Image (cartoon, rainbow, N blue to C red; front, side, top):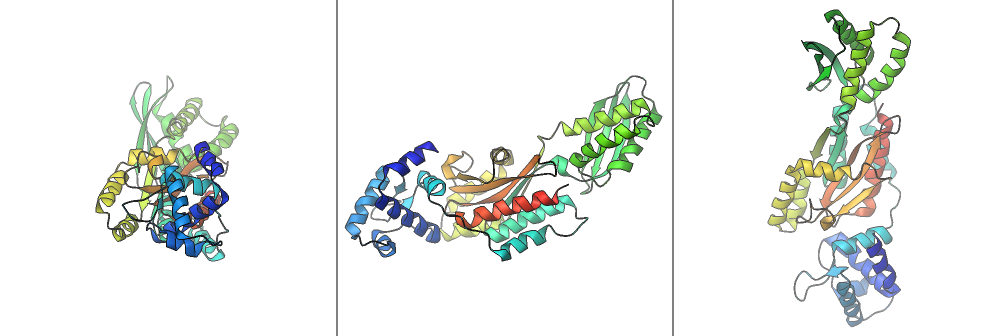
Length: 350
């Protein structure tokens, strides 16, 4: 954010170094940091009194705060944003963790819904936070499609996914459509797209219909196009998977803040708000970081989200994955975990 970079440019090199040490110590311990601790960490020799003067200036700028009288300082959400945007050094992901992520998506014939759920658990395990995956319902793998005539000009499309879920859509049908044409349309779809996601089915049908148009009943072909288009037009429908909430309970319990725990779990229950927040990362170029009060959802619980979009084989973004944790996350470690997981999942998708 521009205000953060303005604050970054306005403080001296010495103040930046002290600020960096405050943030790094806080991210390690979760506790406010005193001048004596900072003095021991600095590469230059400064008295605790000089450090306290710098801390007071940083506090006046809104970058650090003292949680209570005579305590050390800890970064504010604005300060964490400045640190993440301007000072955070992100290294390469260790080979061992790369192998863990790649193994998660290895093998063939896996159910996509299971893969997404396992990815959420893996993110939770690697980060010791809560893992979250936001997926378009159109990534579900199709098991069976059926058409049911309703009234003249209307038919019900029934789609059964590999995970057993069933969804229906009412579509308009062309005049003169016969029961045999509906059966032909269903048979054609079940022959060509069983085992595909809707995205893959749309691509496959686009090619197959061009070749088979002459052999298909014209009205059946129209029903096929209408049925798939109807589902394709509902890509805003989202599935949200959250795993590892117990990790958040454990972390916040260590801090003894029961009210924040209650607030965070209430936040997670408002799935619609969480989906909207994660949706902001769908158009991002890489990893997005939302810190504490920067978003209304987690403004009271003091939590952060690190999220990245993933895409299908045609580079269309179809979901977001990431982690939810306290604002004192190890950002340098978690950012590459989220980024690499999104890359590997994208390779897995058809």
